[in-house]
Length: 295
Length: 295
Image (cartoon, rainbow over all chains, first blue to last red; front, top):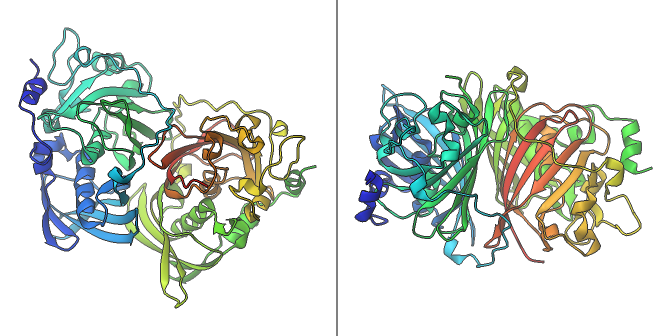
């Protein structure tokens, strides 16, 4: 029985899970929060960008008049490391149905000076106040059943994933925190035979079984192996900018995350992510611009 | 002969065109610029969001160590009006190949206090320094030839477009500044028979024939009639957030802009734009989150 499934048998609750504990902030003064970035969400030595976005998103949800992220735009400046950080927020404009805010995450250099890691602009609202009208024409991508997909903990006959989908060998603690089951159609890279298509698809959840919420959607859009692997590239693909739209509150149960890249050019690529919930609703859309650093 | 075509016969040069004059900034002090927002880029009374993005983009290109916008994320706060405005920029981080900056555009209330209209985070670089590798799998959308498409100045037998694609009757000065020729397949709304598909496609240029550059691409992604019209909605579709990636410097000649909406839900929709140049290169990708205000 895979670890993720056994963990899910004693499912963690929203508010009392690894993800909640590791994104918890301590209020230093109004709008300013301290946090110790957990080593549990790293790929090699770098803290995962989606986890960082959830930390910033949580700070803004506390600081702004509205609670739920509707659209969050993050520009990644320098690589974050596990350890102390401070999040500084600013209310840019408070409106009746939407509030706009800004937040930055800083860490400290050897002299204790603040070094900015990420800056975010975001508009927040109340997802529960939205009308129920849905006229989407988007349909969920075809996914094989979860038991025919593969995670980092699985060792099938031919498939042996690098831990956490890390682009190079090394310990990736985040693999223990996530339930990721990759569609075999996007696993060619792990077999040395990338498809050449810029696609990555996976069932997604938290390893301790905590259900999804808007904050964990901020993590979900940046937690899969890079599409670049299936295009046949290895090495790091650091995010320059990532924007997420949260469109509705996700239903309980595993998510499906589908990422596509259509334009790899000039050393950059975009990754478009769609996140679908267990009720077949498109709960989040994101796009990031990333650099291709050839390995 | 349509106006746009006759204007193009005496083509305006980059740097000496309506667009260049109307985005020109006066340096007040380092990083701070004054501008008189032109009434020439309005839809009804509101200044077009793409024109405003170009103004902010031009300020950042002047203030930052790098010249070309790579990714620009804008959150729209309050509606801009023609008249005086100030753009305040900040260098967030200067790197070797990318610089990140922030900019805000303010106008003035009755007491002369600054009111913030838009805030932008952006990463800039040098498009000419990018390698030539292109491994895109994206292909240009099918477009009819320009002479089979329709602009606001055209009056075909059945097609009579509202001026500038304005969502309600009224003067839209921007229509005189743009060369927009809409694909008849996305023109059902103008005939009272919207297709129900969230699609809008048009040939795009500046009416005075000025060629495209990275700044005018910031305008191009937000200048077509809203896809909501073809979904069968009328009324305003104000932008909450718009992010643009500029992927390469556009070749001379008209652009093709294709916009799609897949998810209209809860009173919001996304608009994804692709801009293709005359050499069939995908020069820009954008996504915006907009509100649907039923008319």
